Length: 180
Image (cartoon, rainbow, N blue to C red; front, side):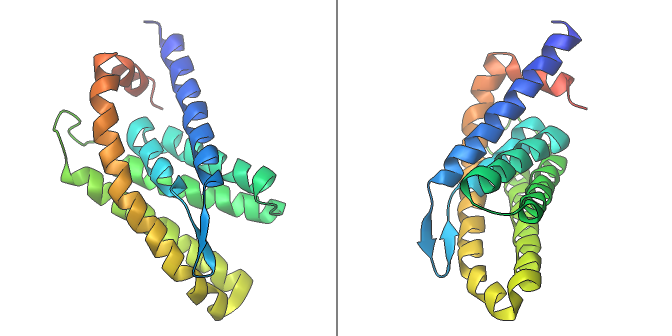
């Protein structure tokens, strides 16, 4: 395959994963003063599958697009969302970079998800503290921790379910060869 084809495949997967983040964010329910959803799991999955930069872009773009078009947030909140979700996907992708994808299950995938999810919780709590004060931050913490726990459980399961199929189709190798 040509290098340009691999780059195009990577761009397509960034778009697909960003769209998945957007769609999964639509399915949320209120809990303890915040909203619970599984978008963080897809953000982590993006970092795991696409690597740090591409995974971070998919996570950040999908979440920022939701905030811009579906969440009713202003430009500053959209930018903050992009940056914090990018960091979440980037960190998870960085920690997965040297993982053994041939193993059935790797502890590294769980640890990468823990670090990525907790980095987002910390950034979201900082944002909540700045915008809403201590009360607003404390009220959002339980739902954020539930989102993080769900993401930490779901993302490695999805990752280890998808990797064999992506490897068998030759897609995983092509995307990794085009990684920046």
